[in-house]
Image (cartoon, rainbow, N blue to C red; front, side, top):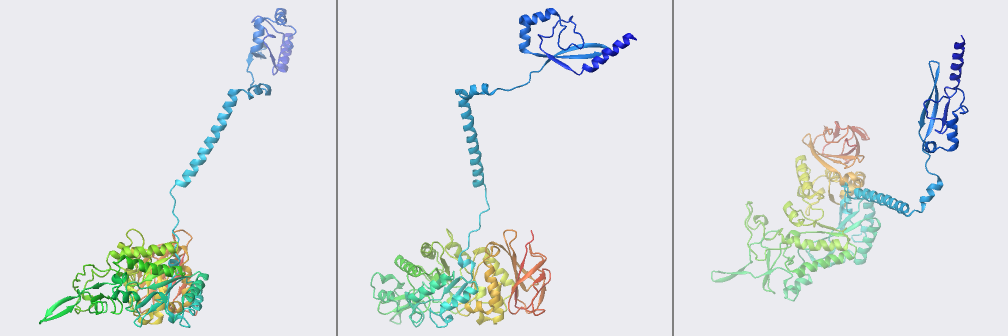
Length: 614
């Protein structure tokens, strides 16, 4: 019982103190395995006297232990006995004091190291920044579309003096206001230079007296500029009048005008004992018969590929090329923004005056079409002349001026002209439009338009021929439909004033739509629907730009057409504009339609917009 009580006391003591840990140095605890420590005496009062004495005396070994390690004393109860466990403790990391750190502040080694690390950090940062900039700059980008010129964004309207209420230049100022309302920014003035009674140019730098003077022209250009409009001039460089001072002095062989025109001796033949004079070759005028006319005063023939009152200038002579270049500069300095030149395919001729070959067409011998004209038309030498004139226009207008031709050009000749750079702006091949009547069909429209767009990229669409205007060849309502049909084609329509004013509301809407990115830079898809409806779609390059659908019904019957099969066309489409002859189911045309059920009436044009599908 007593021992049990003792055990209980011991156990109780252990229970009370077993969780306690006594930390002391080895100088306080002997490492002698035979040494005993009484339970409950945590202050070391009963330690071996020798051990205490050694501690007091500062035993060397003990001192070493004290300096190096701390120990941990644990009291452990096992089966009623108490055991003591002594373990070395781990030294805690205390770091360096401020005083210790300050010892290294001014140490040269650490100073250099700090500066080296500082400089390395900023060099690394600068290198990363430079690398990021290089990646941004050198990474391939989607190039921004090249801005279009004014004469690409706007249709070009040909103005004649007959369009002026007062039949002069001053009266045309009032017309500019009407054109501004129709969002027209490009005006082409029909020839205003001084002419003879036959319409041939007497002076390339003088305005017809009945039209006004230089001040009147400058005022017109100023008024147009204030309305953000540009004025172009139409000129014919191929020939002058026989009344032109150059020709008169050339007849008299006065230098430098002696060779300003194309002169040649005739061929003398004997006919029944009589000498008979004939032209130097078989070249023909476009009006038929010989292209040569005898001049008695000079004793030679002069070339005229048009009327005999219009002698051809000799552009094989560099002085004549420069002379006409000076004419262009004259008008540009007055404020003209570019030119549309006529009959440039006739500029040069074969210097050897070789006969033309016969064509295979079954026409009379004196008909212009009876020859192939390889020596008098579209010669490669023309390209060099046109290039010089184009450079003048570009230089005088800060590369913004128009340099275009009034006549159609073939694909192979255009390739020659634009071989090294773009020389001809707005090349046109509009014979199918300038000769069209109301019966023109969808197949002709799609084939002719799509082919020329692929060749010329941004062509002119001329609706009015030299001989007959669009409205001379078809009813006015059909002319309105064809005019509106061309308005959103990639390219520039060339129209007359009555083409603009006939369907004013629809025209203004479409003319304004030409400012958008879809029109200026979008893609084009051509289709024929129901065999009679010519359709083209304009889609934007970026999502979010609206698409356009233009449909012209060439047939004589109303139709319901399905446009949903055209790429990117959405199910719902909206009506934007329509020709005046577009029939209505009600008094108001529905503004929203399903793309698979679009009604269209005979000879009418319908313009729609859609949100392109991705």
